[in-house]
Amino acid sequence: MSDNPLLFTPLRLRNLELKNRIVVSPMATYSARDGHATDWHVQHIGKLAAGGAGLVFVEQSSVNTQGRITHGCLGIWDDAHLDGLIRLADIIHQFGAKAAIQIAHSGRKGSSQRPWEGGGPLTDADLAARGEGPWPIAASSTVPFDNGWPAPHMMSHADIDGVAEDFRAAFRRARTAGFDIAELHCAHGYLMHSFLSPLANNRNDEFGGSRDNRMRLPLRVAAIMREEWPDHLPVFARISSVDGIDIGWSIEDSVAFAREMKRVGVDVIDCSSGGMKLPRGNSLVSREPGFQVPFAERIQREADIPTVAVGLIREPDYAEAILKDGKATLIALGRELLWNPNWPAQAALQLGCDPDWSGWPAQYGWWLKRRTAQQGR
Image 1 (cartoon, rainbow, N blue to C red):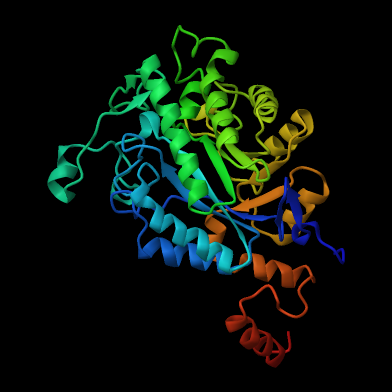
Image 2: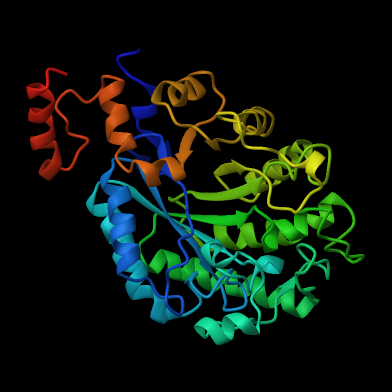
């Protein structure tokens, strides 16, 4: 292995320097109360930040109450949410990482149960069981997410203008809270993705039909994000690079979208996939390590914009190879970090670039270094 692994080489984006190329993905934990961060979020984010990643995302935060996925989603629709978000950004900074937050609206996948409570649409039974009833949802069209799900209200032009301004206010709050990076959520079937994908968007006005029309709202909100974010700091967009196999939104669409995102000032494309309910033969199955890496590689190459690779990237050597081969600029991990929040610090040891254990909090590193020596490792 090289003496200077790319995984642990600092990266400069605009005027912001990340200490390494490891990103903690935004992972919804559905544990907020009326949109407010709780003690759960403090320990969760603190644990992940202490593990050594260069960039730590706070989970998707909703721009208004309609835009929540569940009753437990973090909110950024009210100034009252700022105290909790300030605390999370501060915790991340205390561990030497940069703080990012994903800003979102759930669209037609809102008003749903937490995954461990069924993951389906909320009903009066949920109101009776937990005091968490359904609310009206809105999206690009009236196409429901799946059989048995409610049809969303098709957003009017006034609705679209309103949600764009809700995003503007959310970006302002995110910066007030001290976050270094904002990310616009355009993936996984939520509102922005429901405008992009022809599987969810059957409008016949300037927000539907052609790809350019379907990109109109996400690009408008991305431009607002760039307007509201300081020029010296970067902004990201997370996309579903494809809807599935030979259906809906394609990788060619994503390359075109990424080019337009770059034009309005987005600095990095975070390359995920999926989020639409598809026939079995069209679903992209996440069985192979790095199954989404080819999307990041193609978008980075053809749109000439840095990308984040994410999805079943578990081994440090493999993460390093992705970067060395020019397939992405950053590596994001999600569930792997829930399993092992110290993955970044352990990767630095494995790749031979942290001989003095400086990547660990001193409260851990001092003891663990000696434990390792005692065990002859």
